[in-house]
Image 1 (cartoon, rainbow, N blue to C red):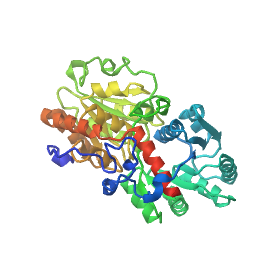
Image 2: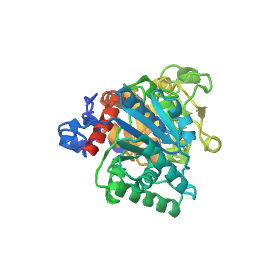
Image 3: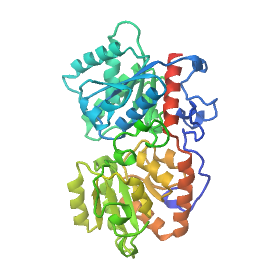
Image 4: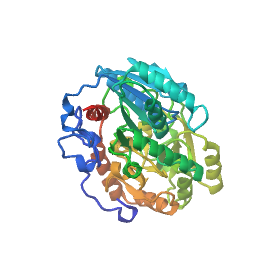
Amino acid sequence: MSAGSAGSAGSAGKPRGMSAGSAGSAGSAGSAGSAGSAGKPRGMSAGSAGVRVRRVAFVVGTTAGGTGRHVRMLAAGCAARGIAAEVLGPSSAGAAAGLASLPGVAFIPVEFGGRPRPRDAAAVLRLRRAVRSAGPDVVHAHGLRAGALTILALAGARGRRPGVVVTVHNAPPGGGRAAALVYRALERVVARGAGLVLCVSGDLEERMRAAGARRVTRAIVPAPGTGGPAAASGPGGSAASASGGSAASGPGGSAASASGGSAASGPGGRPLVLAVGRLTGQKGFGTLLQAAAGWRDMVPQPLLLIAGDGPLAARLRAEAAALGVDAEFLGHRDDVPALLAAAAVFVLPSRWEGQPLVLQEALRAGVPVVATRTGGIPALTGDDAAVLVPPGDPGRLASAVRAVLGDPALAARLRAAARRRGAGLPSEDDAVAAALACYAGLLA
């Protein structure tokens, strides 16, 4: 629901592009238009059911977020199904996401950075040799840069060429004209060289089609721990790790005790407003702090909890102090489910998101949600499981939080809709099955 229609309540339904009942099937990789089309993702041919995928190579770049965990989940899912899986990427990614220690999956270090540089030519040659040695049926690269390097590596390869799938996980970065030009160049390379492009949101699908991609469909990025091999969740276990979670506790330790209160309230019955994420510009925490300054007159005054860490931690603490906002920065947390259980409202103020893992956890937990209408967020929440506001608008964000905290009936409707929506979200098994169906369709 939009901030202007917070009281509306329609059918929770299923997230567009995600089938609730697709466990073990191939049907959940498509978008809304394909939900009824024989359970196959768009891009999967009718004759692909008899195609057997025996070996998959995953290519991942530098990652500090959910991309590495997503690759870990897919690789573990392949291994659990008897499909040989290798992961190729920088050593830092192998360590950060636990890819180098994944049982039954080979990790092959191939060093390349997050930005174009002269050493990329050497990385292309190393990728070419590694893929040739692995001999996969399909190479599945994650991220535009990893995808472009993979396509360049395979362009000069001799012999049988594997099918190429690229998942686009992120929107164009900030940083001015040069960064935008690089992003568009990577889009064109991937669009023209990949056999299938998967995207985490509808806006990215539109960009890749405009860049010339022939086959584009929706990726599934489920929250960890939602059905699948136990190894898939990796370090951190839940969406907590996608938000920078570890065992380090904030003030007081666990969710309710972090603020000395009970569920949904802190000291003196103060409602807890929770945000979780890596402290970077994309996550919009500066906007959230400005919004929090707009609810200081509420009685009792809400207590803002921000879980996560990142390069903007010191700056955000300084901004909170300058604004006079009562905010607790909890740092890395492993107990995001407990934090969600203690929250009166969960806020996701991001400038852009694909399929944010912590939002999926919030929906499954039945927490009232206020989020930005951007990227893949509306497809996850639908029209009634969150109050959606424009990104970068602290006034609208503050009004939405005030509405949820001040209207118990609205909060109850949001909780019920979130639970319904959460129950229909895809699992890790759905995501692996959908990816394998895409691979088979590409090879058919």
